[in-house]
Image (cartoon, rainbow, N blue to C red; front, side):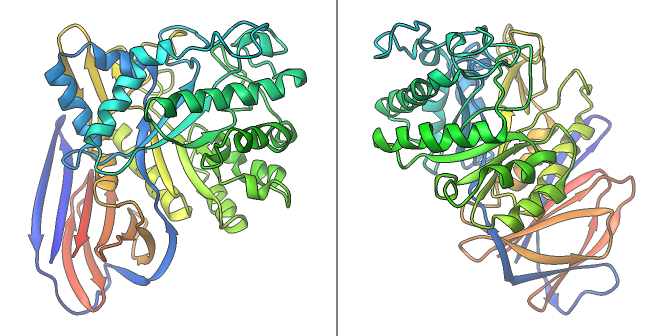
Length: 442
């Protein structure tokens, strides 16, 4: 049996249909995609998104009933089946304002350290996600900046660097953050060393060269995690755009640091660069390749729902086919303005909340992401395919239960025929224009 789930979008209306179809014996012809389940590639960790203070703040404005509905849309089995979460150590641009868990340079014992800000909006959202997710949550922490007193420029913003004399203290600060989360019942699975380490921003930011990141990891952060009984926390380097993914990996991973580095995290803001993902996968086949951030920035794009949803699907397919093992979107909720954001860096999110009317809007991008996250399960392995046209973008996976998942994106203005051939069975489809389809083969 094959189940075909298709989402179309015309005249600002989205429509999703689910059709059960019976394949026939045979092989595909001239308009074919061949699936080869016996040829396997990377294993999928999962899908998720960022729980920022902005996301929690926007969600908090809803009534308890609508809050529950919104969280279930992401984390329940009836929703998008998210179980991965990325959140920030101290403030990021998508915080209501800037803050630090501790700002006293004299407090070397971290006695004034507090997660008071996280307890307002971030932790309640993670707690709700934990309640509705069938899988255990896979939580990643990422710092945007060390406290201002630890930096060369004495401020959280405008880049700056971590002062060498504070490297050991900053590593202990990060460990304290992890332990405070775990005291509250939220196990931290992953950590990135620095969000966007080559970006000097008007918001929270800090610069590391590859050598600086390697030294901090090797001599300070990794030893601190071991000392604090946090060896279960996986470390991902880079956490920046794809065009420098391989460059950063080859300059940071060596014989000594390889055992310390579990993966390389990346963002999408500099374009496709699927080749960079593939090169990195080929060079470091034992490392995770996790997409940790991407969003539709209002400074670059408008609210065209179809184009924005297609942007997500195109990038997910390209990254998966190049070796990506995990996907985390940026803010899962924002207010109708695209914030709050303490520097006005407003963005789109798959679910936008009207903080005054107790309502929320589910964007087309949510549905497009769901065509992957609902059906490609944790532990699924990507399998080989060949297709007849570049006008249809595709990726295919085999779940641990043996089911085959094929996701098909048609960004064009024409319906296109498709013969799906798998293990001697054939299914004929017409792939609608401006659509995304997921085919599940039992």
